Length: 407
Image (cartoon, rainbow, N blue to C red; front, side, top):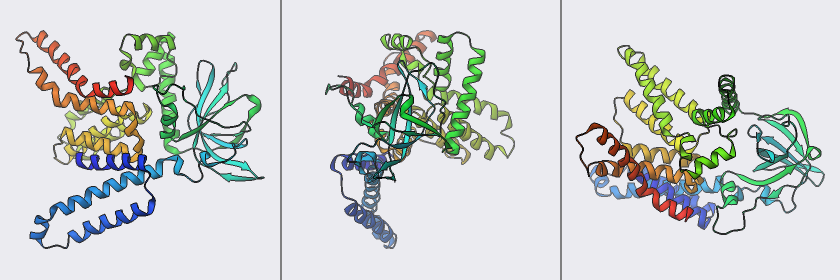
C-alpha cells in the first residue's frame, strides 16, 4: 500500500502542476492495463524473470488514476463551472450543503450552484459558493437542502494580499468552492423545494439530536461549547476569546476530534463483545457493529483527515481480525491515506492531513527508540518518560511541515 500510495501521490502532484491532456492519459492507462493482462499469459519462468514489468504496469496505473482524479475533482477543469462564466451571474439557483452557522458579523453556509439565468434562459452550472447572510435579530429560516434564488453578484474569493500568508483561495478551490456572495434580505428568495441526500440528512439530524441532548443537560455557555467540541467536533458555538486562549497556550488541539476518540470507542466495543466471543454469530455481528459505529461517529464529527485516517485503520484491523489476519501499522497508515486521496486528491495539500500522517508515522518510527534512551526503575518516572518520548517523537517529522507552512 505504501508503494501504491506513492504512485498515486506522484500522479496527483504531476497532474495538478503540469495539467496533462486527457487523451494521452487514457492511452497510457489502456497500455498499463493491457500490460497487466498480457503478463498473466506469460510462462511461469518468464513471470518470475520479468516481474518488474508487472510492477511497472501496476504502479503506472495508479499514477494515471491520480492524474484522472485531479482532472475530475479540479473545478477549474469543469466546463460548466461558475469560474468559466465570462460575465458574473446575478440570478443563481443555490442549494444549501450544510446548516447555517452564526459568525461574529454574519451568518454563513456553503451552497451548491445548480443553475444561472443568462440570456433569458436557465443554464446548468457546477461549483460551490460561500454564502454570507447579513446579521439580523434571528437566523434565516434555512436548513440543509433548502433552495434559494439569489439576485446578487457572485464574487471571486480573495486572499489577504500578503504572499506569505495562508492561500485561502486555493484552499477553497480544493474544497470545490469557487465563489462567494454577501446577501441581505432583498437579495434572495427562499423556495419551497428542498434537495437533500439521505446520508447528509442523517448526519445533520443525528448531530442536531446529540447537540440538543448536550444543551439540555449542560449549563453554562463555555462548558457547553467545550463539550460540543470535545465530544462531536462541533465548534460553531465556541467563544472566540476561549479559542484564542487555547491557541495562545498551545493546547488548541485538545478541542479537536482525533484518533484518540475512535481508539476509545473501538476499545469499548471490544470490551463489550468480549463476553460474547464464544457465540459464532459474533464473527459477523462484531465487525459490522464496529464499522457502523466508527464510521457513524466519524461522519457526525465532521470527517476530518485525522479521524478518517483512524476510521480506515480501525476498519482494517476489525475486518482483519474477523478474517483471522493480523495487520501492519505502516500498511494501515498507507491504506487510509490512499482511501482519503481517492475521495479527495487535494487532501494531499491539506495541512491537517500532512501533519496528522507525519505525527503518527513519526511516533511509530521513533517513540520506541527515544523511550529506550533512558531506563527508570520507578514506575511513575517510567510512565512520565514514556509520555514525553511520544511527544518528542511526534515532533521529528512534523517539524519540517511546520517550518514550511508557518515559517
